[in-house]
Image 1 (tube, rainbow, N blue to C red):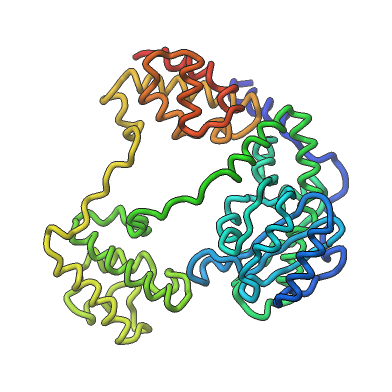
Image 2 (cartoon, one colour):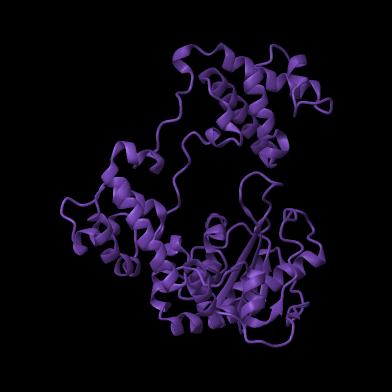
Length: 420
């Protein structure tokens, strides 16, 4: 058996797995049936009172209309708590959930992939003080698949129907099958939380998970992206500053239209069409119409709108053209390290190997043990005096949690002592 095979065999032996038994049981209906959607202030007050009087952790989920509507707002909020059952709340009809948030202030919230839902929950006044993230718990416990359906199946033995995950949740009224799906998403979330807590405790990782959950709660909202138009898909094809100006003008025009119409920007104009127009720089609307993405289905007024954006970019003085993308803050791409700083390249090779090996020994993803960006930054600019303490302090400044520091500081101290 090769070293790689031995490592894979050891990981497979350590990975948590369900006990052998019958096939997963399909979960077809919520225990108390599909609850009515809360759409009035009185209804919200009743839900708030019921959840305030109930006990235990609160399962929370939110459904968005990604790909259909502008932004990432919530269009349905699902909650479940022992003693209160399941509630479905329409945040369009009830946009202020601060009273419900206050009623749950002392409760632990259970979410799956919390960082996806917390931004839209914040917009409607819901901010957990404590949480348990079942997806992150699954990663730390070493499960190979951590989607909600896979976790419920592998841990609890039930099969969730996931056919409505990508539907347009802004639809009103919401069809009954969608509401059933939404209610089932929180049906077993607390049960999953309890099973994962036990699994993590058995592996000696429960305190690690608690540190991770606390870091999610404490993290501030991300700042607005600078120059979001630079993230247009296919932007790597755009080399010249004048072409970049066309992308910027078209992107900003599209964003304004999408915001006004409350639709996903991709439904207004595709990224591919924006890039094609930037590369071709068409002289008039007729030439624009010949490009992919601006076909015969597009009306004259639309074509004129996009052509006007192209012409604004073409008319800009040189001084107002966007600059070439600035190098990101931090170390250069690792592929250039061997030439720029051979010692740093040697440190990075040693550090990566050490972190990867230890992550395999702990049976968790390398990026959860320590993010690749943290490893790169540390290897590019190590402390002046390399000790376990100085390495730990450097990791702490970069946002590493205490459990991560405890697991990696000594490994990285040794790696930082390597030279080319």
